[in-house]
Image 1 (cartoon, rainbow, N blue to C red):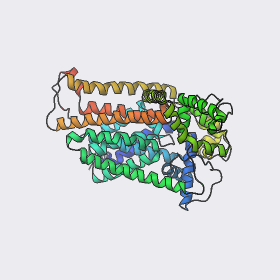
Image 2: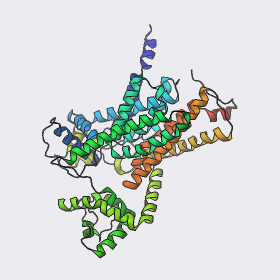
Image 3: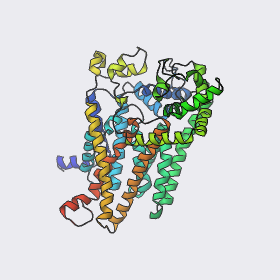
Image 4: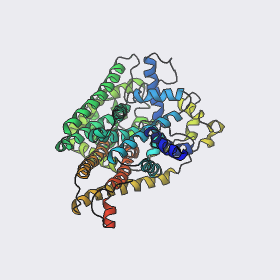
Length: 494
């Protein structure tokens, strides 16, 4: 057996392809010199530490004491904390790149069953160069798992028979993990999973998809519920900041209602003490330490707790007294979120920022463990041209979306016909595209309405658009056939 033949056989192994794909996806982060950290990374570390300590696996850590971050999942925070405790933040990049590579290979395998391994690597290469996927693989928050959850739902619900038992187990396990890593992923799945199962109903697969989807959602719900219950009875209970209060205030109807309610009773809400502040930016309301603009951060602990406790009553009052205005604001936020395709300030926190933090700050220590950073802040400067990359990513996503629309249009208006397996695959692929766009819309709805339109929330899923566009042309080369004058049907790859 020749060495070349042995190499080809080795490269044909699925786990080898997944590892190589992960290495390619991680390459831009390695070039950057440092994974992307965010202030939320520290709160996830705190959530993870508290969970591990509750299981008697860790001693106390007095430098992680934030009690207002129940929104941060311990399911993501615990492995993040263990990876950092093991000595390097790079372990997080490796695991997230592996998860993304595994997911992409499943998408490629199920949509294009005869897809050669080299085409899968080409798909990885294109997405590494032309999408935001590698940036999110190197972003120490669970954002990358939003896109992974949507892709795995499509694979599990639409193409289950094309998975081996091992692939099915790991895809289901990773899907549930992705849902519990952030509550927005779970809420989004509650929308697109039933829609996907309903779309499959006429194909005879709807009942099986509904059962599979309901089972996986139920497991995720039980895990999230157990976490919330344990937090509720904990002596060091964590509290979620009043995100919805900040949202309705920034939207405008909340400010109108606040002024009216406080005019009737100046003690109606704790917010009445802050009604003279601008209250036009949700981030400033929650996180600004400026007493002239911030609300939650500058407040003392009793006031913070009262703001949290009063949130249901305040938001209900806004919806009751300003229903049309708030509905329009929410629709506008969701629409803005759907079209927000740039890279926001989340990627601007490079090593220089974290090294300026106090010595005991946990993320400073994470940065100090990366080679080069102890030599000075300039050694931790981001090396990737994020501005140019944002423009490239935006153009690629828009072009891919238009291409996918044109594929559907060509199928109908140019009267292309498929028969046999090709017809079945085409019908399933159109359903997959519907699930993709339903997931993108559901993500925009959940994130835009609850938190507000921030580009990061949509871009974390948008890499799926070029991925599906590439696989669409490989599996159903409609436009190549149009330009070449070839008969309709499948282009088989050797």
